[in-house]
Image (cartoon, rainbow, N blue to C red; front, side, top):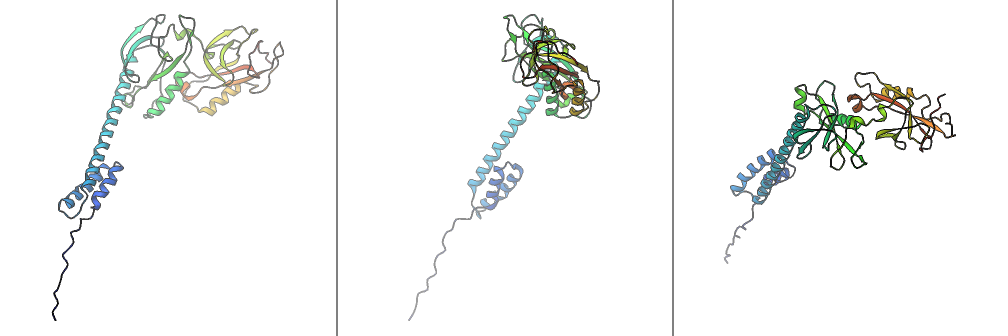
Length: 326
């Protein structure tokens, strides 16, 4: 008896997916571009030799890497453009003085072009409200510089009468030096006021006092009693008529380096002997109380070192009589 031998023919199997190609795709998804490309190169050689599959993964990894490179390049271009715009704006206003009013073409952000001085009595886009130098030292970073500038500039933001009899609601912006300008010794911040929502300003901010400009004993409107903050211009009122507040005490704190918020508030509290307590009643029987206001770090850097003690109505209403000092 004889038997025919039979040997099964080998089955054609697909090569396994290349691990380097898969790893390259995963790394590309997390923007690890150099490492991803390295794995892709090794995977390509293995796949080209027929030992592994995974060409689709390599193509997908390449597409992802190219997309990340495009995103990064766009970010760099935008960053460089923003820095250049800020520097152009800084240079454009360096020659202006406090109280100067001007028009300017603007691109994105504060990219000022073609700055033209205007008489403040005429319609204009901007007014320089204050200029001050930040403390010397290492570059504190964009966020720190912008934060100090915003607080200081906001302290100088006021309302200005307009030709139609309404108030010009103004907002402030600070033009600050870039890191490159800082390293060249340029540390000046220029605060600008412009009309909120666009449009033209009419009149000068220099003619509109804030409570910081008033003397002890003056009564005024323009103090937000519920939030204990300035609303803008202080409109002086007779103390025997309705008014928001009265200046009970005022002190220009000593110049020097920023002593810290706690130290400044301690000095401000000292101005108000009756801080938070009920003071003597006015002539019409209303109850008054005293609040204190202290400058913040940005305002201090901008030269606003005034601490105030104000008399307000206890229940956040309006006063109708002068403060009776004990």
